[in-house]
Length: 131
Image (tube, rainbow, N blue to C red; front, side, top):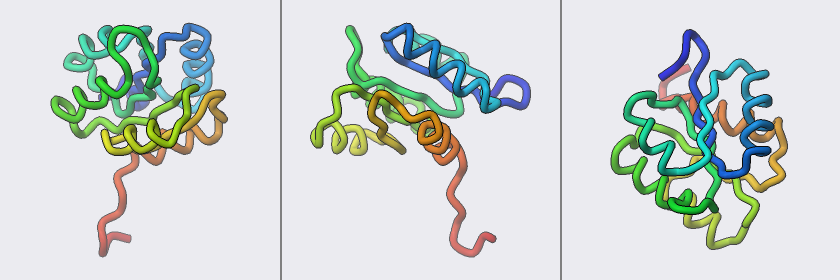
């Protein structure tokens, strides 16, 4: 689940510039990062290195983000997903949430908002009666 003490994040986006920028951002916040240029590349690896969270682009060639969400819900339901997209629509927002996205952010992504979304996704909610 993590490399050393740092939680492992998977960044899945077909845009190399986005992968580089997100890697810099989340690494600077203390996370370990693995990046994937395609959904199929990510799905091949997830059994071997289960990340603490996935930052997932919706619109990619081959396997899109919605298909990845379905596969994760079936095979790895505990992995939280933060969706990022440059194609924001009400339908995409609703579909991403229906398929299990903990957060949904629009590109260009605000760094502080993304870090807050990741931290919120990997922090288990308090149960009633916990303090």
